Amino acid sequence: MEIWIDASGLGAAHRAGCREAQSYGRAMIRSLLESGREHDYRFVGWPLRELGSVERFLAPLSRDARDRLSQPRRSPGPWALYSPIGFPRVEEKGLRPCQGEPPAIRIATILEERPRALERSATTVVTLTRSAMDSLAAQTPHREWDLRWVPPGLGVHGLLRVESQHVQLPEGDYVLASGVHSADPPESLAAVWRILKAFRSFRRASGKRLHLVFLGGAPLALRQAAACLGLAKEVSFVSTGFDDEFTRQRLIASAAAFVHVTRPDASWLLGAEAMRSGVPVLAPRTASAEEVWGEAAAHFAEGSALEISRGLERLFSSDDLRRSLAKSGIARGQAFTWEAAAHRILDCVQSSTSKSDVQKPVTDWIPRSAVAAAG
Image 1: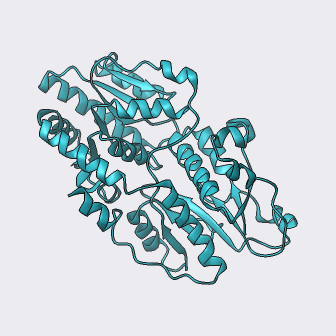
Image 2: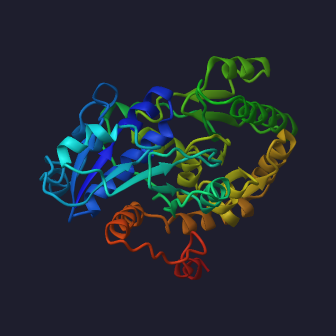
């Protein structure tokens, strides 16, 4: 079977500054190429100008995976169109002359914590959390959507750039948070504003000389807000964190804690990666956040700067709590692999082409064996 990957969403994410989504797409495509040995792959709508060549963007790959990137066989039979970010953006009529028939399945990937509406350009919709899947099912009861839950892998593997080794980390302990960009809606900017206020209150009350680092950058308004709160020297906005994976991993692994910023994209993947790295996580008490982290994170009431400040106080006043969260986070994060995520996507393709939509019920993100092993 030929799987055509609609990569136009990667370019859209790059232009919008959604580095988390772009990082997810890269890891997911790599895993598909490494796992789907019985398939041939072809990219459609590759954003060459924004991201360079396919080989450079996906490097390093095994030789077998690179060979599967050759031109499709153009043989008759079913084929699939997969969009790792968002809904298919490539016109179907532009693909038919190459294959002679429309795709048997069009898979779209929803990265948002709180998805709003579905488009009609997909037959199967994949979400990263069960709560997002349930939300979509409630919004579209009249549609016979094939909704699938595919938890992503955590951790990344990629090309390390030599210059990334010279990234300067903040002096002393720091709290890491996912950044925002100018395309974010007002509620996301307000969430960051609350974290800034909470961080200032926590510093004043505790006397700890912590720094706050936003990975992914931030618009000018938030930089000015930090300065107005007297945090110009205590808050940093690292905009290069997603240009190379080494920088992101280094910043996450060296953080004293991670605070999750609620955003309408895949920003929670950063917090999940921090969890797997043994970094204590402070996350809002939302359906998606509690599903992702469970008891492996400290939670706060969403929309309250006071709650965030109290959460930071709990984290940094108890070494036992921090060690407990680190241990449970590592155990929980090890249950997520990109190989498993790729096989779930391939299962979507197989079930559609074989006319079988039987799906085993999933009760939790963590297999029972992993829970038992974690004690």
